[in-house]
Image 1: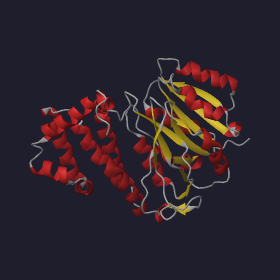
Image 2: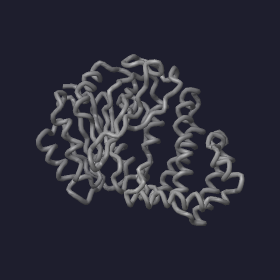
Image 3: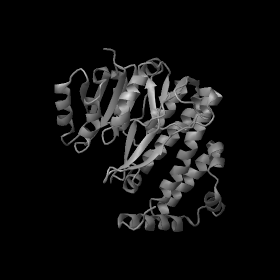
Image 4: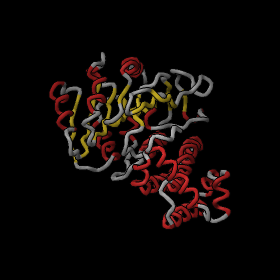
Length: 338
């Protein structure tokens, strides 16, 4: 049977959640059309042993790939090289796909030939499993359901990793390499793929379920404080990539819509680090780089707070950082509900 979909599962120390991630594929009516790559990124726990059980039971469906630790991007680079499916999608080992919608989506993919298939996704609470939000949904005016469109026709498109399924042949013809040993490179994957995709189709039911509130996540406050420099590295990589390679107006529009949010997020990351003078110097340096080298993004991140901060050369940085720290401490104590 033709493999419809390769799923590249990024698996690093996910023994507690990996079976939840893999089980929807076991029960799928399209199981034999799936190519599930479990990329063990040098785990220290039972991740590889759990994956090996699935491979032993269904070797034509599940493949365990062991490798030295290289970070999230390295699992994606490996998955793209080994993919056998007509389409390629990524899954983190602590997330999962929708049991209810997976088979309908796979049936839909069997008739697709578009470069990019876009779906909304759900976030859910790590502690309770409760669905929190649905993100990425479009109405029929912005993006018609199950109709082929050209990316240069879509004006309001801000893709995320969880929404994207890419035709594998696109990745074969235009190899996409993701920075390794670096967090937050999902943005790199999304934008580099969008550069080469020409056609897109929208499937309106959420497929990806993204886990929130797990301690240690890259977007948790602890993760931000440990890895904010990786976020800055990724951002500079993609700003330079856009300047060098992106020529087509519709691709530039996608990059700018996505990277504007990333630039704004980097300021918020700095404010989350705490009221330290060394961090103030870092945020001033970042602000100067945007102003001198990427003036479009400097202008786009010019809200009320940033205008004030820039006007006083970040003199009040410590007060904002201290306020962010107080919010974080309340959240740890279970007080903050925002």
